[in-house]
Image (tube, rainbow, N blue to C red; front, side):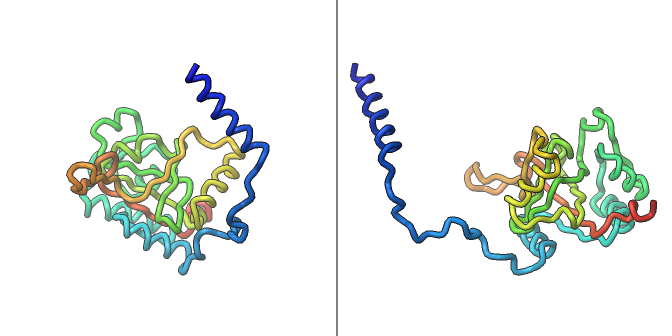
Amino acid sequence: MEESTSREKLLKKVRHALIYKTDNPYPRVDFDSPIYKPLNDTADVNFAQEFTKVGGVFIYCEDETEVVSTLAALHVECDWHNIYCAEPEIQYMLTQAGVPFESDEQGLIGLDVGITSCEFVIARLGSIMVSSKNSRRLNVYPETHVVIAYVDQLVDDLKDAFEAIHTKYSGKIPSLVSVITGPSRTADIEKTLVMGAHGPKQLFLILVEKPLVEEEI
């Protein structure tokens, strides 16, 4: 009986709130203006600054020819092994660079480096939006995740990225959409920073000014 009485009291308060609405106590507050100030720099510069602040490695390439040479250099300098890539466009560039890679499911075993595309690059946050279209696993499994993006994928804010992905897929967005901000890290254990706790220890973003392959065809 006591439980029923408590329930009725609660429902009565809900009904009362629905019937007798309280006036807005802050009528002068502007809820429509943007929360953030405009970016001080261009989207690419702002992204590079924010991305490096959280431990990401930012590389700018003028075109895909420069991407090929960059991948070849990184392969040697970083001593990359067990590279996995499932996307044909990036596989082509890796082949041009002479970088060996795996592309079948067995290549995920012992994976060290994963190379993918992304959906959008968020300038204000220095973040990367990925989806199941890019991969469900390559932003989690490898110690090093390399993302290749193009300037036309840059957006100012997170809300712009969500609007853009809805437009891109006509409302039928991929089953998984995630936002990456820097390499994986945690300080849950004795407040000691541990890199790569739940994902890659290193995160590279190669930003390409223009896709040269399309222009050459």
